[in-house]
Length: 478
Image (cartoon, rainbow, N blue to C red):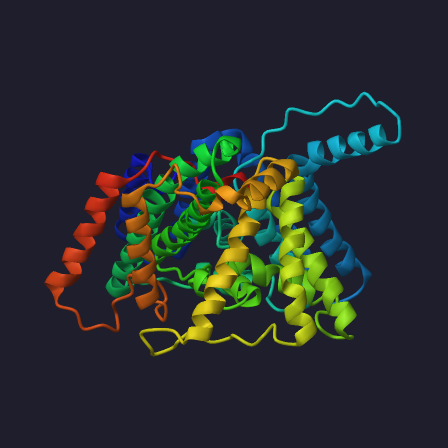
């Protein structure tokens, strides 16, 4: 079941009515309803993998309860290790077993051996990387004393499986989301309306921008050797907007849907393509994952303490792990390495935390220097996305080499005028709204009711009329 499906359009109102009108002001029943609804939502793909969510939830719930009884000592550390091994063990088996086996076999072949290695027919459970990191962060936070272990098993299972963000995030922290399951929730009309606005914008980004980009991106990447460099560059640019519209669209829909039920999820995207350097980009792209690696990997490794060499080492480790998190393919590892290399000059010059504010805040046009930095950052990010999208490292190299050819200055064979116009309008609107929490946040704007509703209807018509072929969300594979 996806947010852009008819199934979800039926599922969401049913859960909403049951939640607010059948079991209102009954916290336990509301949480239980969310657990059941979340399991139905997940089982729509494959009911067999529900057991993994139950196992992951059970392990971390028990570990948390037992750690709560152990104020300190060796046993507490062993409990944390149990959680880490259980969660990463499940993730490693389902996501990386064949990858490491095949990589090992290829390495041995280089040395002259020909091992007979069999890969397992393993199906990757949807969203396993997301809910595994979410439950693991709970155990770590309990161990650190940043949150008290909960004894409410229903609230904890609801926290792990909460359907709006179950399969593609945001990766929530227990310190933010779990307490919201433990306190009575009251329906707030303004919050729900704003949630619907954010859902609408997310569906527009996914169905009108991302899905239509996918049609051309798939063709260009699959037949890159037949196209000129100008077409390959356009294909890469379209993929930049595809992955942004796809993933940030999912996040907007998830955050908006959660607000219908009285929950506030963390922000996951903050207009990343208006970033002035790669460091700012990673503070604005997939924020829940970036901050997760910062708090649970980068800082424990020493962060920026201990000199430049240690900082560089830690940054490279985080990006390599982040690349591998995205998928069992060397393209993702290389993509992580490229981002680490792009980060390197900022660290050496001590300017990796220069751009912490919104670009051109309060102004209509950005300063010329900021504009050049935005364009440069978007360009290098787009080149990195080629590696991310490619089927293999050799595919990525051939594609990039194909761009930097004399044919780069020719007229592209593929030039979807309507789509490009839609992207330009989309980017322009997000630029105007870049200081808002999301692009349809009108709470601080005095717009006539007719103008607002006309805008909503226009977006609905665009979604229904120009929604591209129903592509699965890209991050479902992670």
